[in-house]
Length: 140
View 1 (tube, rainbow, N blue to C red):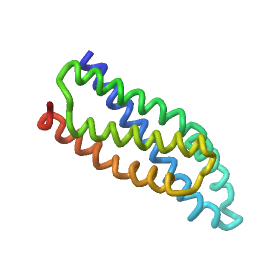
View 2 (cartoon, helix red, strand yellow; view 1 turned 180 degrees about the vertical axis):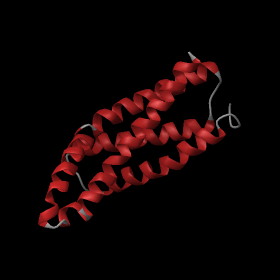
View 3 (cartoon, one colour; view 1 turned 135 degrees about the vertical axis):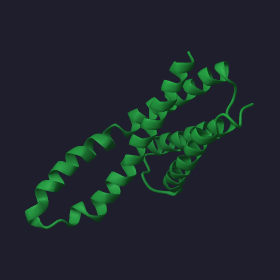
């Protein structure tokens, strides 16, 4: 079960990585792809196909990531105990997901919730790295 718990942690990590791509893909599209000269438009078409899948599956990957992290936390708690950095990262990830759900339900794709969603997502990078580096030292 310990190995399965570790696997779920890595599933959550890679899901989070894919989720972050959503922001960067849209940013690159807005800043660079739309401004390409006409002779380079074939790159924009290829990029949009890639972008379409990242954006389309953002919600699904988010659900998979949160479920994987919650299950990872459960299995690791049963085996080793609670990692304080891991718990902090999981809480921030769940709050970020809740903000995303709020935005989806409100159908308002702009506003303070979106800024908070993005800020927490980037803060989560540091929490995940801190958890990976210090998971053995800060156990309860």
